Amino acid sequence: MSLSLRSSVWFLAGSLALVSTGCNSVPGSWHRQAALRNRELYQQTQSLAQQNSAANQAIASAEQQKADLQKRLEIANERLANLNNERTQLNQRYISLRDQLEKMQNPLSPSATKKFGDLVGKYEGFNFDPETGVSKFSSDLLFDSGSANIKPNGQKLLSEFAAIMNDGDAQRLNILVAGHTDDKPIKKSSTAQKHPTNWHLSTNRANEVLVTLQKSGVKPARMSSAGYGEFQPLAPNSSDKNRALNRRVEIFVVAPEASIAGWDPKNTTTR
Image (cartoon, rainbow, N blue to C red; front, side, top):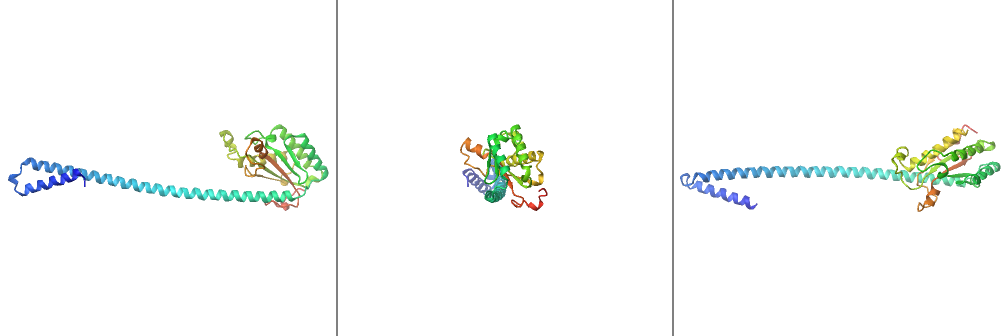
């Protein structure tokens, strides 16, 4: 009990004692003071009750906010776990696909292999593996930074690439286009509107190569595309040189009987 409240109680007790000795012996001012003090005590009690009620409401509100935040945290953690699981599955699919393709022998004829080899000396940033038939295009050769629009020199290279794939025995082969980026996140708002993440950028670039090949005469039933963002680097993203290696588009030439990444060769109508 506070000092002021104890004083009030003693004052009230004294007032009652004086009253009990006889009304005639107690001055009227004492009655008025007692009534005033009682009113003050009542107001203090009401104020304390209101403060206590407000405190209880604040505690209840804080508990509810805590519960809401906990629920949101659980949902966010669940979403993060799902995204990590999807990323793991995607990486496993890519590794499996890459291993399958790298184990395959070059399905191109010696003539087509030589033509692709000639392109290596003609275009800086283009590489061709004669053992597997895999072509690698530096993204700097095909695209400006943050863009999925193919540059004129890249258009010319893809036109020549399509001409080889549309000639002779190569016409029976299929194509898988895979886009990759470095680990730098998308920052420019104008770029993010078109490519919110590196996954979007890599996929959009792969699709643009596919569409360009189609415009150059490669039948769409022979082609598919995929984007892997920054998650399948050729080298650690520790320098500008390594990042340039990781920004790339790969084109896998696939034999018609091969079934990879859910692509059923039976559904490929062009031979």
